[in-house]
View 1 (spheres, rainbow, N blue to C red):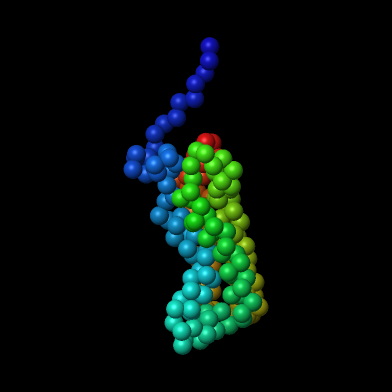
View 2: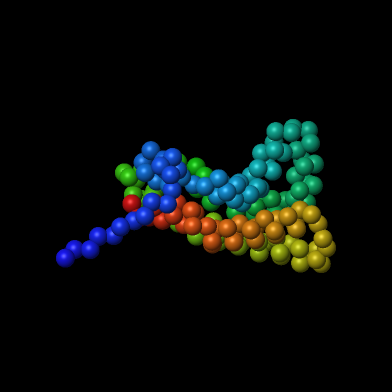
Length: 160
Protein backbone atom coordinates (compact mmCIF):
# COMPACT_ATOMS: atom_id res chain seq x y z
CA UNK A 1 0.00 0.00 0.00
CA UNK A 2 1.59 3.35 -1.04
CA UNK A 3 2.13 5.94 1.66
CA UNK A 4 1.48 9.57 0.91
CA UNK A 5 3.06 12.47 2.67
CA UNK A 6 0.40 14.82 3.97
CA UNK A 7 1.56 18.34 4.56
CA UNK A 8 -0.25 20.72 6.83
CA UNK A 9 -1.01 24.27 5.80
CA UNK A 10 0.73 26.71 8.10
CA UNK A 11 0.45 29.99 6.24
CA UNK A 12 -2.24 32.05 4.58
CA UNK A 13 -2.55 31.95 0.81
CA UNK A 14 -1.47 35.63 0.65
CA UNK A 15 1.90 34.67 2.08
CA UNK A 16 2.85 32.80 -1.09
CA UNK A 17 4.01 34.38 -4.32
CA UNK A 18 2.53 33.76 -7.77
CA UNK A 19 4.70 30.64 -8.24
CA UNK A 20 3.70 29.07 -4.94
CA UNK A 21 6.86 29.90 -3.01
CA UNK A 22 6.59 31.18 0.55
CA UNK A 23 7.54 34.86 0.60
CA UNK A 24 10.50 35.92 2.67
CA UNK A 25 9.35 37.31 6.03
CA UNK A 26 9.68 41.00 6.85
CA UNK A 27 12.23 40.31 9.60
CA UNK A 28 14.43 38.40 7.17
CA UNK A 29 14.48 41.43 4.90
CA UNK A 30 15.54 43.59 7.87
CA UNK A 31 18.26 41.07 8.71
CA UNK A 32 19.58 41.20 5.16
CA UNK A 33 19.54 45.00 5.24
CA UNK A 34 21.50 44.97 8.50
CA UNK A 35 24.02 42.53 7.03
CA UNK A 36 24.42 44.86 4.04
CA UNK A 37 24.91 47.94 6.22
CA UNK A 38 28.33 48.62 4.68
CA UNK A 39 26.64 49.20 1.32
CA UNK A 40 23.92 51.31 2.92
CA UNK A 41 26.48 53.57 4.61
CA UNK A 42 28.42 53.80 1.35
CA UNK A 43 25.27 54.79 -0.56
CA UNK A 44 24.28 57.35 2.07
CA UNK A 45 27.76 58.83 1.95
CA UNK A 46 27.49 59.07 -1.83
CA UNK A 47 24.15 60.87 -1.62
CA UNK A 48 25.48 63.48 0.80
CA UNK A 49 28.11 64.86 -1.55
CA UNK A 50 29.96 67.28 0.70
CA UNK A 51 29.73 65.33 3.95
CA UNK A 52 30.21 61.85 2.46
CA UNK A 53 33.83 61.42 3.44
CA UNK A 54 33.13 62.72 6.95
CA UNK A 55 30.28 60.22 7.39
CA UNK A 56 32.45 57.34 6.19
CA UNK A 57 35.30 58.40 8.47
CA UNK A 58 32.94 58.67 11.45
CA UNK A 59 31.29 55.25 10.97
CA UNK A 60 34.29 53.39 9.53
CA UNK A 61 37.49 55.12 10.68
CA UNK A 62 39.52 52.39 9.01
CA UNK A 63 38.73 52.17 5.29
CA UNK A 64 39.62 48.47 5.20
CA UNK A 65 36.75 47.74 7.62
CA UNK A 66 34.36 49.50 5.22
CA UNK A 67 35.62 47.38 2.32
CA UNK A 68 35.35 44.22 4.40
CA UNK A 69 31.76 45.08 5.42
CA UNK A 70 30.91 45.79 1.79
CA UNK A 71 32.34 42.41 0.74
CA UNK A 72 30.44 40.63 3.50
CA UNK A 73 27.26 42.43 2.44
CA UNK A 74 27.31 41.13 -1.12
CA UNK A 75 25.63 37.77 -0.36
CA UNK A 76 22.71 39.41 1.43
CA UNK A 77 22.27 41.86 -1.46
CA UNK A 78 22.37 38.90 -3.82
CA UNK A 79 19.64 37.04 -1.92
CA UNK A 80 17.53 40.19 -1.71
CA UNK A 81 17.73 40.45 -5.48
CA UNK A 82 17.18 36.82 -6.51
CA UNK A 83 14.50 35.83 -3.98
CA UNK A 84 11.95 37.44 -6.28
CA UNK A 85 13.25 35.55 -9.31
CA UNK A 86 12.17 32.12 -8.06
CA UNK A 87 10.18 30.05 -10.49
CA UNK A 88 9.65 26.34 -11.13
CA UNK A 89 11.67 26.63 -14.36
CA UNK A 90 14.85 27.85 -12.66
CA UNK A 91 15.99 24.76 -10.79
CA UNK A 92 19.62 25.88 -10.47
CA UNK A 93 18.59 29.27 -9.07
CA UNK A 94 16.13 27.65 -6.66
CA UNK A 95 18.88 25.39 -5.33
CA UNK A 96 21.18 28.39 -4.95
CA UNK A 97 18.51 30.35 -3.09
CA UNK A 98 17.90 27.29 -0.93
CA UNK A 99 21.32 27.98 0.60
CA UNK A 100 20.17 31.43 1.72
CA UNK A 101 19.50 30.57 5.35
CA UNK A 102 22.82 28.84 5.95
CA UNK A 103 24.75 31.53 4.06
CA UNK A 104 23.00 34.23 6.08
CA UNK A 105 23.85 32.45 9.34
CA UNK A 106 27.51 32.11 8.32
CA UNK A 107 27.60 35.72 7.20
CA UNK A 108 26.13 36.86 10.51
CA UNK A 109 28.68 34.82 12.45
CA UNK A 110 31.52 36.22 10.34
CA UNK A 111 30.35 39.79 10.92
CA UNK A 112 29.96 39.11 14.65
CA UNK A 113 33.50 37.71 14.79
CA UNK A 114 34.77 40.75 12.91
CA UNK A 115 32.96 43.09 15.29
CA UNK A 116 34.34 41.28 18.35
CA UNK A 117 37.82 41.44 16.81
CA UNK A 118 37.46 45.20 16.37
CA UNK A 119 36.35 45.54 20.01
CA UNK A 120 39.40 43.57 21.16
CA UNK A 121 41.67 45.79 19.07
CA UNK A 122 40.26 48.81 20.91
CA UNK A 123 41.05 47.14 24.26
CA UNK A 124 37.36 46.56 24.95
CA UNK A 125 36.54 50.28 24.92
CA UNK A 126 32.76 50.76 24.82
CA UNK A 127 31.12 52.33 21.80
CA UNK A 128 27.44 52.43 20.99
CA UNK A 129 27.98 51.40 17.39
CA UNK A 130 29.88 48.26 18.35
CA UNK A 131 27.40 47.41 21.11
CA UNK A 132 24.41 47.75 18.78
CA UNK A 133 26.17 45.70 16.10
CA UNK A 134 26.95 42.88 18.53
CA UNK A 135 23.39 42.84 19.87
CA UNK A 136 21.89 43.07 16.36
CA UNK A 137 24.08 40.32 14.94
CA UNK A 138 23.40 38.08 17.95
CA UNK A 139 19.68 38.60 17.48
CA UNK A 140 19.95 37.83 13.76
CA UNK A 141 21.80 34.57 14.44
CA UNK A 142 19.20 33.50 17.00
CA UNK A 143 16.36 34.49 14.67
CA UNK A 144 17.78 32.64 11.67
CA UNK A 145 18.35 29.50 13.74
CA UNK A 146 14.92 29.46 15.40
CA UNK A 147 12.46 30.96 12.92
CA UNK A 148 10.17 28.31 11.50
CA UNK A 149 9.03 30.68 8.78
CA UNK A 150 12.57 31.30 7.55
CA UNK A 151 13.21 27.55 7.51
CA UNK A 152 9.99 26.98 5.56
CA UNK A 153 10.77 29.83 3.15
CA UNK A 154 14.04 28.24 2.12
CA UNK A 155 12.82 24.66 2.53
CA UNK A 156 10.04 25.22 0.02
CA UNK A 157 12.64 26.37 -2.46
CA UNK A 158 14.86 23.33 -2.15
CA UNK A 159 11.95 20.88 -2.23
CA UNK A 160 10.52 22.17 -5.52
